[in-house]
Length: 490
Image (cartoon, rainbow, N blue to C red):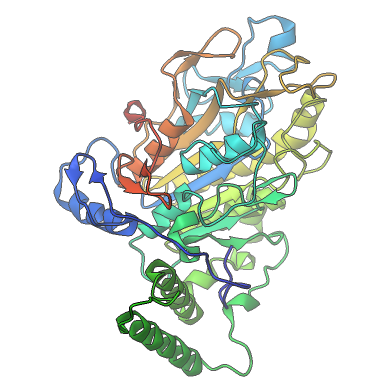
């Protein structure tokens, strides 16, 4: 989303963020979203904290785009009819009384370190397609501008910000640290790239820094180096000169404001962007996190020499280096036809069982279990919130179609009920939160809307999800459209 040496083309479109309406019930008219978040950061230092509030210094958000079957991985139904329970049997885990699918034996041994939420779900508008579900999961809002079939549209600066971008805006790390990094792969539906990933109306400075190269190979870090004819002093002088010009443009009186004067948020975003770039060029610790070759070969093998496995290792290194939010995205597109190999998709409309058993789950089980164990062993799980989730689940009945695209042995899209894994930052481990019905089709106890899940992420890093501001059309918005943190996790 952004490059250390500067964006291609225009930095961002014109913005018109409005005043804040409220922070909770406290009126703060005149403040925009960044001011809101700064005010909250100050307030939470002195207020009594509810359970889990502000416990997370960092978040690792593992997004399994394409959506694995919740019944076959996390919520087995051994008493259901064969056309629902499928081909896999449940296995006991290290957490007493908790059973998961036989395709996750390594995660079964780490189950005392995480909690399974088995009742995430909602009834989305329109058809249950990937695009709208991704946007809801990543931004905490309905995808109002998507097609009636729920297909994605290209991201714009009018979009509401992603959870990673909001956390980046509120980041307390120094300017020589990354606040939001996306690794593994871009989020993709068909030809649309970056659904729900960017900062939208916050400006390009708070888009993620993306590293989508194959981390099984040495990562190309030339982006952190200056061109041969540009010294660090020369770059500093350019940034200082540009800042001086911006200041004079904003001070210049005029009855007809120039386009630059009418876009203070764009200038602020531009300034933040280049100040961050300058700081990172000078930093060694932030860049060192990308040098996976510095890790012992045995540890790299522990994570698995796959794109997903090494992305999980990179996430751990970034958290150690002070990164606030890391998103690890599964390598295949959300709607890719599942194929053999480590990087194939989760969208198992057909051949669900051989694809999970032989290809998807061995990679996920190996790498995600290593991430949980490694964070725990290093003492990082106490201050790092880890979430693993897809945009929805898969249909309970094998071969039944909701989108007219299911083949033999396949499971269709199913947003009404699915599972997420959550760990760290005060979340009580070794448990199951919520209970689905006997077919894994609908929540039976303690339903969790995807917006509740995002509210929990904001809560964990010390941001009130009830925060309200105005978008580019002057409409009042909450950081999350509705929902509350799931305090029962703590």
